[in-house]
Image (cartoon, rainbow, N blue to C red; front, side, top):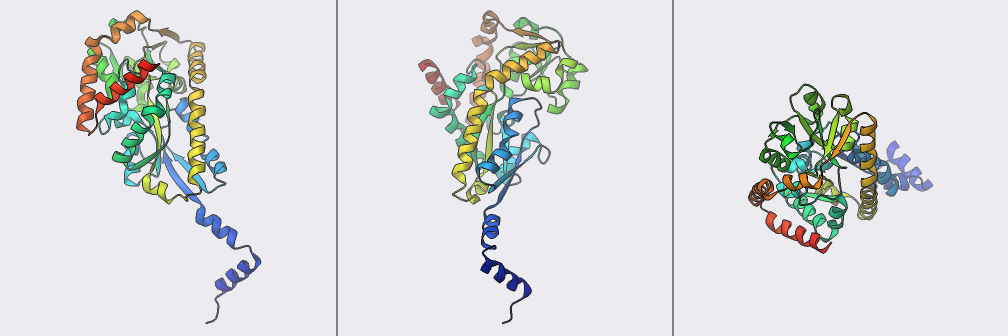
Length: 340
């Protein structure tokens, strides 16, 4: 049978030794479409932005990552990864409040109020607990995890006491903080993420809970004069998760490099948590905002059993309905805290 022009060309290239390498490269080249939420100014965004270049370099170009913040809305991204509509997501745990509330342990009032303490608990306990939920509910592999920088409350009027929350309309980013706000007399008010600045400016809400980096990135200093630290929802985790089938299709010789590089990214992210938060706070102060840190006596009032017990009980019930044991997790966290 006579050879076609394409077959003759391929035969010539193969004989010259120039065909095998391109074919190998093409066979191994993989691209992931990964979603995120564009929380401008946050340590979350600053940590994930360099990831595509670093992964491409670590894998010799065998894996490329494209980041998208508009393909799928943030709260819908975990389901999109599970269904294969996205390859992966830098997913934020408040998105899971309804379907997987177990992941919101970091929002429970008074349970975890220090990020360094949270990081120390990752490998004895919390990393695998989160990975288990991603596997079972979202058919996903967790490759890295992190947290947002310090959380704060933005307000036009100062918040000096727990009583100052009473009667205020507050935009929170998680169910547990909303339940706590209700207990102290505030009214949780839903506002889409991209509309929080004008909502505060127009009086649709009186208070906005967000991270100090995001506060600066979104320009809150242009509409409010005060931000305060109350240690509410201190630990707001995020995780890079990849659809299981997408992960399985990645060549076995590439996976270790991807895992190792994402662990480096994670370690650098946690090492930068305190400097990043401090720098973001300093920028807000320089912009003219007043920073108030709630003193221990006010935190004792805020986190009194009369306020937090109902929040925990509600979380336990929601977690149980989703198929997990929240009480056991809290007990294990408390045991690790007791060890120091």
